[in-house]
Length: 167
Image 1: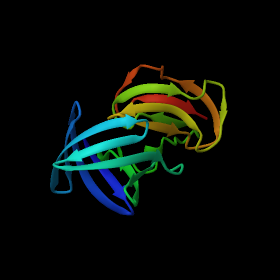
Image 2: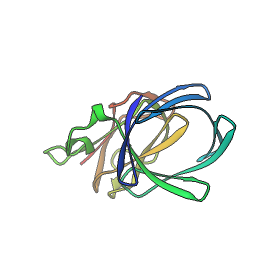
Image 3: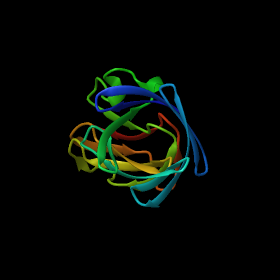
Image 4: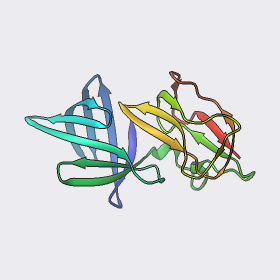
């Protein structure tokens, strides 16, 4: 999976391949062979050679980024799929004022936090999708009414699949 990561206002190209606990990752032109294990929700052990790193991952602000803490260091990371970027429309806003929430990467729906007909505020969680053993909460990009939910707990979703519509 090829992604762009913005870390502390610097962009990096990622290519991540996963098979079970084994991960091959390229960051810019550097290649890493890793093992990753989730030891509790939001806490991962990353093994690189003889080194073991404990990473704590939590959702950052309403911008969709995650905060990763490794030892005494903290990083805010925003991931995006360069194939999916379409300017302002990538956030899902349409001319009619509708906002379309789409899966950012393939995964599995683990929670639906609201229902059709509910009012939501900007930044409110709508659906949680698990991808690569990380849970990503999709948040409402605007205040409004949830008019459609196309996700069910346990369903597998593809990148770009429409999960909810907010007006």
